[in-house]
Length: 154
Image (cartoon, rainbow, N blue to C red; front, side):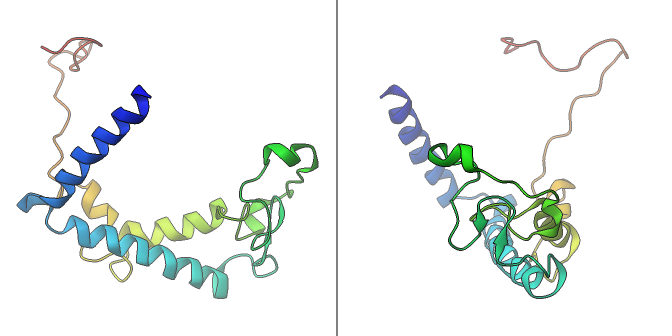
């Protein structure tokens, strides 16, 4: 019960933060929307052209993706699980999870292709240009850890 209440309270606070972004983050909402749209476009592109032409509808684990188990190794059928030898030949690992090959195509597009991720790519965001992420403190001596020890708030 405590965990449920904590998660609920956290989600209330998180939604307040999401509703009132600072000027530094004003493009972030558009970028997040673009990421989801890009994911849909890239998966469709992969299905049609790039990935796994012989195994678009079949899942690597669990058989047919559209009608298979939601996740590979469902507890009820764990003894009947059959995983393919090479997941990279498949678009889907199970009914809802793309394979690493499909995810790689997706992340490559989002990392630097502004046709898929607008107004900022993930490379822009990680590069501290947009989010203004603080850089880690510099160590004064090669043997000194610049980060505080666990439990230290000084």
